[in-house]
Image (cartoon, rainbow, N blue to C red; front, top):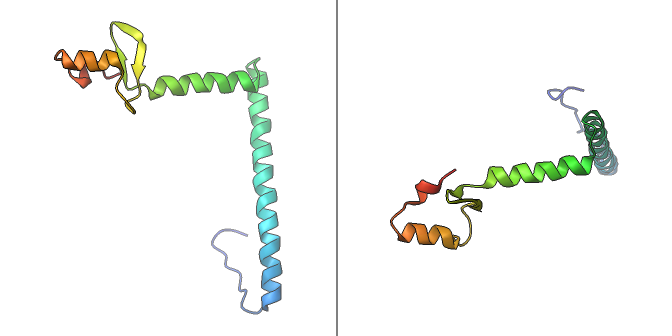
Length: 107
């Protein structure tokens, strides 16, 4: 059935409609689970082609995400970064107090 087709449910009684609803809910859960299993299998295939493990890929992804989240970096010490949330780090507060602007440290 395509998404534009509508099913006329008006001829069903309440019990039949509840049964249809319960069956539909179960089928939705099964299809969602199968979609996750299919995605996992694709992920395993990609890991194998890369001669890696899923855990290694996930760890690399976490590192990439951390790098993407960085909004400000200390040019004097590139290890010192800030994502722009929470308290400003001391190195940034000191630099702003000495006349620098926040934009001077934008990544």
